Image (cartoon, rainbow, N blue to C red):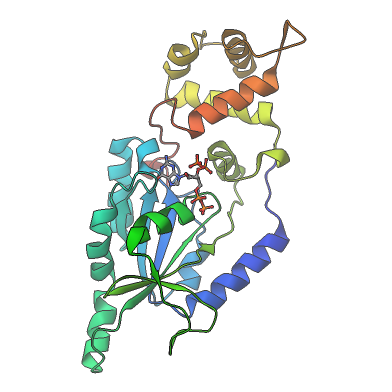
Length: 282
Ligand code: G4P
């Protein structure tokens, strides 16, 4: 199986990012808590150098709590501020404001020494597609979402959301292109649905997912779908098709449908909280 992302999209995303990053003090980088490293693009370290940095483990509700904590420790150990959040339900949002101030304290101090007081920190949310950028911005901005565009010092056409007197957020997130020289990273991004399904073979992807589950979460598929879990991955997919009545022409197993069902169950958290990569593998 081979994964790729279109170079045309990549060039455009990169150009936008370079343009917008000049305007901000703080990069709020969203990663998917289930794959916190594979869902990053390390180019952001170069693009965002000299900026304050905050990494969010988003969709923390879908990942195992003990690994969320381990990943927070990992990123903090690398010098990033890090918070786990559930943008969909608003979990973790309260602590963000304090963490933003903490992440930007050097900048605030620099401003203060130059006699600049009370200039709000300007922040931008970045991340690969589908990581939850828009959901996060809406959740953080909430009802206090007053747009403050086109005022002096603000580049024309850009919209800023004033979160409070200390922080302004660019209303458009920066899209990072997924990065994978390593096909196993591409595969994990496909599992979580960050790479569009039409460029993939569903059944092959689902079979790879079954193999991952056999190795890392034995028993989960057996319990969820009442299937024997020891056989080969395609056999297990057939078992899922059978137990969930995924059939074509009355009796033939519909493997495509079973694959979609399995991947959707995973992506929506119906297989429980699962983490696909671990700090000790890095
Ligand atoms: P993007 O801007 O980075 O491309 O991502 P977007 O906000 O559109 O979110 C992508 C999907 O991820 C959405 O689901 C959104 O609801 C979901 N999502 C975002 N943050 C979280 C989170 O913290 N936890 C969970 N469980 N889901 C999250 P969707 O299927 O596209 O839409 P819908 O099911 O919400 O209607």
